Image (cartoon, rainbow, N blue to C red; front, side):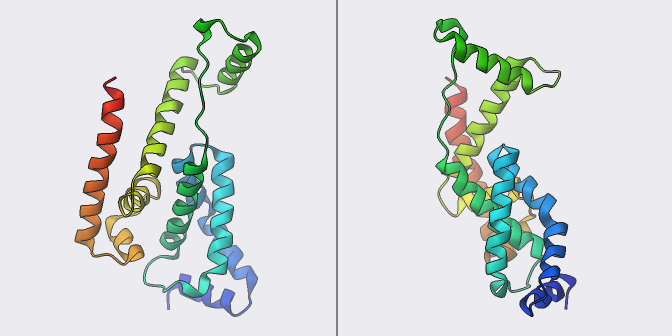
Length: 193
């Protein structure tokens, strides 16, 4: 029996501190995966917390055929993708348009708080591009969205994705290839405008 399986068995037997061990071990990875999907640390932490609650309630369904962390990351990615699709789009204010002075001041203050050595306009463009990419991944149809998200946001290997999704490795490779092609088709026309 693997260490993961032993910890899960202890949780299922009523030893709740064993789940705390799993949470402490996996929390950094799960939050990072959610952050790569959502691009916001607060939202990522919320999604990770929801993933742990969901995993706790579903522990009996874990088959121990792969790493517990991969199973948990799959749950977290799905939750983060759902959260990403529920988001509203943000409309950027054009400072040259001469509209509301208070809105411009708030935007400028927000950009200054983001810090870093980069030009605020470059930072804003990068954040917008990243948000567009996350939205494009979230808009992919299944099974492509799941495979692309697990590979690039969850950083799972193709073999781990195959194990977690109960798909043959060749099918996972095909879904990844087709998903990336669909993603490229969504993103490249926008970049050419």
